[in-house]
Amino acid sequence: EMADRLLLLAAGRTCYFGPALEAGNHFRNLGYERPERESETDWMMDLVNNDFGDKETVDRIINAWETSDYKMALDKELLELGMPEEVSTEPRDVADSDTMHYPVNFFQQTMVLTKRGILNMIRNPAVLWLRFGMYMMLAIMI
Image 1 (tube, rainbow, N blue to C red):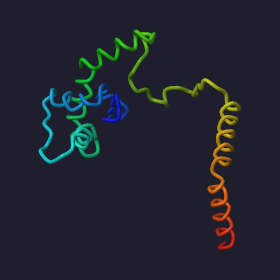
Image 2: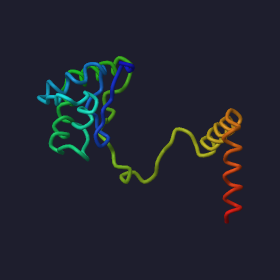
Image 3: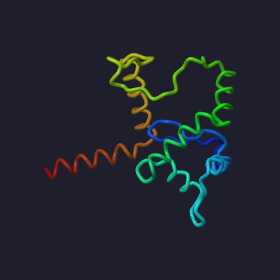
C-alpha cells in the first residue's frame, strides 16, 4: 500500500513489474493460489524464490511475464519515454566482455565517494568518535 509499483526478480530476471496492489492478481491469473494463512507478500516471494521454490515454477512465472499485459504496458511506457526498442533486457554475462565501461572515469568516482564520505563524517560526528574509540580499544587489545 505504500508503494506504487512492485518489481519482483528471480535470478536477475523480471517476474513481475507493475502496480503493487495488482501483483497478487497477476500470480492468481497464472494459476497459483495463496495458502489460507499466508500473507500475500510471503506467498509471492516463495513463488519467485529459487532457493525455496520449484525451479519449473520460477521459469514458468518468468516466461509468463514476457507475454503479460503488464510487460506490454511497460514496453509501451518505455517507448513513450524514448527508450530504443533494440535494448536487450536479457541478463548478460560479465565474463563475455573484456573490460567494464563506466560513464565516468575512476578519478571522478573516487572524488564523489570521498566527498560523500566526508559529508557523512560531518553529519554524523558520533560515528566518527565511535570508530575512533573502537580502533583505540582494538589497538590496546593487540
